[in-house]
Length: 259
Image (cartoon, rainbow, N blue to C red):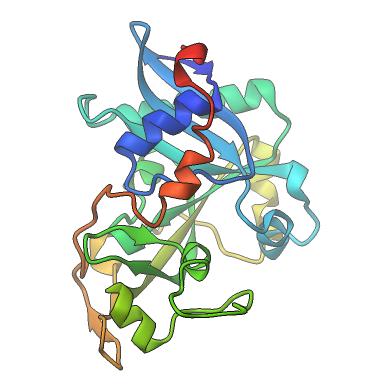
């Protein structure tokens, strides 16, 4: 397998057909394609989340956005062998060392969808604890970010920034609200950067989480309280209804002209 830089339209098309969350982060800097015998079999992207400076300075108060990238999306074709994502990560880290001057590669493992981060553990990332986050899930199993749902709240004039659907609106939209864990992982680019992890506000180690560490809280349409569970309380799908507009932002050009 080998890596090549990829046009964002091709990357977005590949991801939208294979990733459980097809929405591309807007602050994406690099799009890389993984090729096996000239066939595109995987994609990984690097950039920042919605609050780049906040993310790094919460972990390292003296660093800035130039010092790190976050993995935006990573997915492989389902036909590839099981360890292919680990190989993709290895190739990607080599590419980052050769083409950037970042100190750290940071990422989250999405415990909300049942992922403790085994692929990062296999690639020798270090674990830095977890935080709870929440999302909305449609009846069909589409995962919807809170910011996406804000613009689709029904029967609401003069929507305010940060507004969430009320219980009646969630019932009308048939949306569940789900809370779960997000696990932090980091990869230092050099021995010096690894040593400087002691300056972080988090403790980084190889005491990795497992499936037994996953937990959820879910409040289904019409319910007033959350129910706690140790099993993922929804069946995830690749259906695009709420997220379709965001995905199409990356597909406004004709894909054929980039192939």
